[in-house]
Image 1 (cartoon, rainbow, N blue to C red):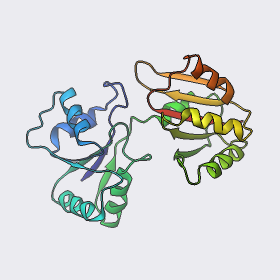
Image 2: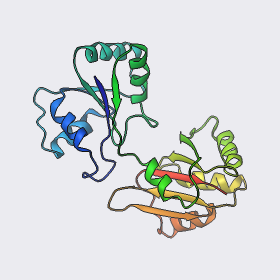
Image 3: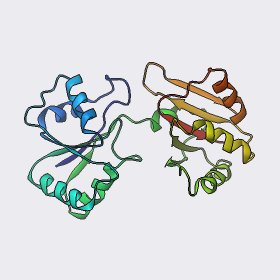
Image 4: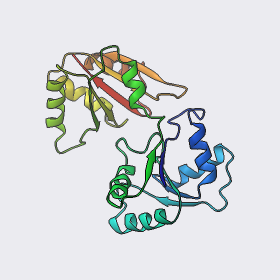
Length: 224
């Protein structure tokens, strides 16, 4: 069996009993970051003896993925993101595709991710919404933002943005004439969790005044 197990995105208590049991019992792990996975084990005082850790990133080639599948056919394995659930905007998705093609049994455990708390925190109706993952950094970025602005008139739009591009995003929205509110959730579940809302210009002003710290992981919500 192949398990996709969520890990805390900031607060060590945000892990399920089932995920903890798998971390203890299973010996084969495919990880977005093997060093982070080992730190996770140490945090919960789980012995590393007998455990194998293999990297699984967006750069993992087809040969390695095929090798991983052969290993999974021999014993139970767990897929771990660096943090959160290994399916949203994550290389773990590639292994799900191959597992389906190979008719391998797999289970996706529910729990930690940044998107769901942001959706729940949104003050509008989110029975219908769009989610874009990480928007393009260069090619196609302007086109995507224009489409986001257009779509946000009908349904709330959620996406992730890198800490390095949040200020750029706000400037781009200003330049494209987006005058409505932007909701930013950062460092969800962590000590310095923050949720703020305002126009692009208001949020830029907060950044300049150090009232909004540009640090951590960001979920962006647009709706008008």
